[in-house]
Every structure is written in structure tokens, then in C-alpha cells.
Image (tube, rainbow, N blue to C red):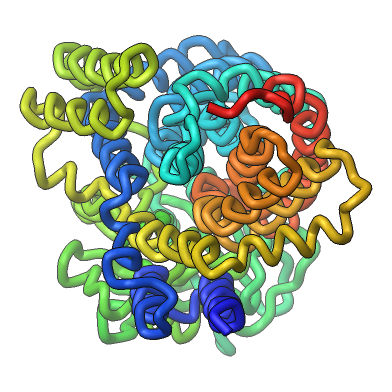
Length: 596
């Protein structure tokens, strides 16, 4: 009976994770409550996710990564990239492949990509390259770098600790490095050889807006019934002599870039995002009889008051407090003087009913604000305000302290008996004590969504073991794979984990698949490490969708990507990694190795 109850809970949890009908935090609380109410776990067991060393370690990694960010460590990386690209996209890609994975091997991937997106946009302008050719590679390099060490991705930390909880030997800091470096080399070669043909020639609004926004302004105008532009083509309106530049055209929910809008004829309610100086823009409004759009000022929709406020984009980050809230409840105009024109989601441009839209990770807010408003919005750290980097490099002293602290954590965990969780806690204490960041900044760096996800899924994994569910599933698999070799079973685990990660999340997938892998290894009489490594890499090497991995979500808006772009680039790369894992994991972690 318990197995049937748990099956129902698992299905319900997976549906909620995939659909996001309620927030992950709510799903986690409901999961914990259901496990206790049905008698599958006692209270202490159900709450074990909060106190698990993996959860504590991941919290510490958020703080340590924030300390590195706050002290400007990645600013050095950004400056080096700008100096070394020397007018060559290929050279820039190579230097990005060297620096980004190195950073993400020891830091949380999300801040690495958040820091690098404005840098990549600025360099793409200088090189005359399309951001769409560079931003998915940035995400891929961060993902691949994270697979090189135990602390490079939360999934590795999680699987390691859960394996130790079952009496296993766990993994060491650099156990992941041989296969991780192989993945990295394969990924870099894939990007250099094929990515240009697989990714679109597309530019987002933020990449098209001039960096010199003090002289030229960007605004949106709408085609009305009185407009003299009805039936005309943009190519005949926005000529070199007009003093205006068309950035993009919006028809319904479809965004049409300027280069693709040449043959369109303007229709009623089309929106044009254009750039020019205030006088020319004002003359254009009067002569063409077009209207300024409506903007959301908290609870109201009002006409745009001024063209001289700057227009820009703000990407809602994974784990942001904006996620799950409507645009009107954010009170952005009252708090920061920021007005919302539209929300772009997965390539579609939403201009109507914006106030009621419930925000999701990766949504792009098209906003209008002053320079101070943009700075205030950026300081919330809830969104990535996409703009050219203009921060001065931080002082070297705290940066060196942060680097030394992180190095100390890595070396302590790698070469001493001190557990990783204790080394990470000591590192946090040093960074806070030496003021690499303050307590408020440390608390803001912790992604509560991730913590609640772990708190809900870790006890779910325990329930799968305790109820016999994992045994039943492994027995079912063995029935159909009874004549298969361990290598085939490993390959199946990798493929299943890789696909499930694209729908759920890498951490949830790893927790739910791991008990089945341990049970399968016990039935086969093999060392579980090869199967656990297949789970780690299958869950982390997530390239096919913008929702499978946080860094893919972050670059979607700034790169102007659609869902299909990830499939086109990610499916072949996932297949390459699947083959590599199937061939190399049994070599690096033999099935017959003695268990400690």
C-alpha cells in the first residue's frame, strides 16, 4: 500500500515541478506534509532535507561565490577577455572557453553567467558579432566547467552526500576532473566547429541599443488608425537620412527584428521600437501621427510620459523574489521609478494584460527608467539588468582574500580529512569576518528556491528507499534488461537522467533517480559509483532546453533565443556527451571496483 501512496505523491510532485502551478517552495512544503501525513516518514525524517550536510554545503557555496563576486574577482576575467579578443570572434570564444569553465569549476554557475552576459554583449558589439552566436556557448562553457570538480555544481555535492548517507565512500574533490575535462574539450570543439551553423543570427533589444544613450534615446511607438504610416514598409521610413533607426517591430506577440521587417507593411496596432535623438523622435511622432505606448506604473496602465527615459531589459533570474509574483505587485515604479512596457517570454512579446502576468525565471521585462532607476533595479539582484559593464574593478586586497579563502576551502576538502561541509562553513566565516561581503549580502545570495527544492526532494528519496519503491523499480528494470551488460544499464541511466533533467531540475532528478541506481547496483553486485557518475553528468550536462539549467534560462532573453534554438544546438551536444559517458565512465570507475 505504501508504494501506491508514494507513487501518487511522486506523480503529483513531478506534475507540480513541471507545470509550476505553485512555487517550488510550496511544492516542497506540500511534499514534506504529505510524507508525514501518510506515515511514509516520521517528522524528523521528513525534515531531514533542511539539515542534510548537502543542503548546508550548497548554502555555503552560494555565500562563497557571492564573496568572490563582491570583491570583483570576475571583473579581472572580464577585463582579460576584452583585452585578448583582439577583433576575432574565434579568439574570444577560445579565451571564454579557458576562463569561464575555470571560474565555474569552483563557483556557483549562476553568478558567473550573470556577470559575463553584459561583457559578452559589449564585446559582441565591438566585434560586430551577433550575441545569439555567443551567449549559448557562454552557458555551455559554465555548465561544462561545473562538471570538473565536486563543488562545481550542486548536483555533484548532493549525490556525494546522499551516497555517504547510505554508507558509501563518497567522492573526492577532483574525482570528477578527468571526465569533466574530456567533456570540456569535446564541448569546446563542438562549439567552435558547429555552433555558428546551429544558432540563429539574432540580436536582442538590449544588444541593439546604443551604449551612448545620453545622446540618443530608444522608445516604442504604436501605429494607430490616424497614423500616416499604415500600409508603408519600414525600409522606406527608416532611411539613413531619417535620423532614426528601427530596432525591432512587434506584431501581436511576435518580435520581428529590423533586418527581417523590411518587406512587412505596417498594420494597425503594430509597435515599433526605434532609436534617435529627442528632437527627431518628437518630430516623427507629430508628422507620422503615431502614439507613444502605454506603460505599467504599478497598479495602473498609463500613457508613456517621456521619451527621454532610457529603455532597457531586465531578465528575471532563477530564484528571484520576483518569480511567482504579478508585475503590478512588484511596485517597481514606486520603488525605483521603473515603468514596464512589456514582458517577453520564450520569444513572444506580451504588451497586453501585463499587470496581471505572473513572472517566471527567464522572463524579460522591457522597462523604461532613468539611469538611477536602472542602477536601483540592478541593486535588488532580483534581475539581470542587461547593459554594457561599467563597474570599476574592485580593490585587489579583498579580492585576493576571497580567492585565498576559496582556495583554502578546495585544498582543505581535497587533501585533509575535514568534511566538505565543515571546510565550506569555515570559508564562509573567513569571508564574512574579513568583510569580503556582509551578512545581508550573504543572506541575499542564498537561493531559497534551491534550498526548499532540496528540503522537499531529499526526504522523498528516503521514502523511496524506506518503502521499497526503489527496489520495485530496479526489479522492473532488471526484468527488461536482464541480458544487458552493466555498460548498457549505465547508458540507460545517463539517458533517462539527461531527459528528465530537461523537464524537472538537475537536483530533483538526481535525488529521485539515485535510490533506484543504488538498488540496481546492489542487485547486479557492482560498484554503484559508475551509475552515480552517470547520474551526476546526465543531470549536469543539460543543454537541450532553457529550463533544464539555470544558466540556459538566463541567456535566453539577452540572446534573443527561442525554445527551438536550444533543441537545435543542445540535442547533438547531449548525444556526444552520452556516448562519451557510456564509453569512459566504466574505464574511470570500473564496475567491479572494491566497495569501501
